Image (cartoon, helix red, strand yellow):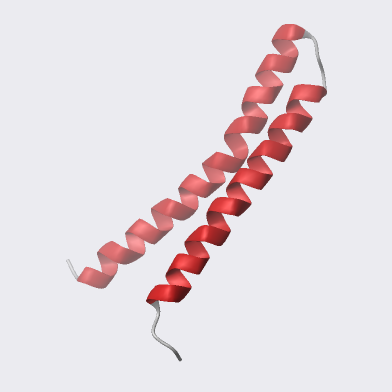
Length: 72
């Protein structure tokens, strides 16, 4: 296994985690809306929380990657 392969897999796994961070709050919001009859408020709240959290994680990850990449 080449070192670059491992780093690339770690990066792809982090992107998948970001996707899950964005989708999971929406799913939780839908579930709670159906359970408590608060449609659509918890779904909307979950979408906002997921979007903000996922984008914050993505921006942090891209900034970290930019710092580690030598000037081009």
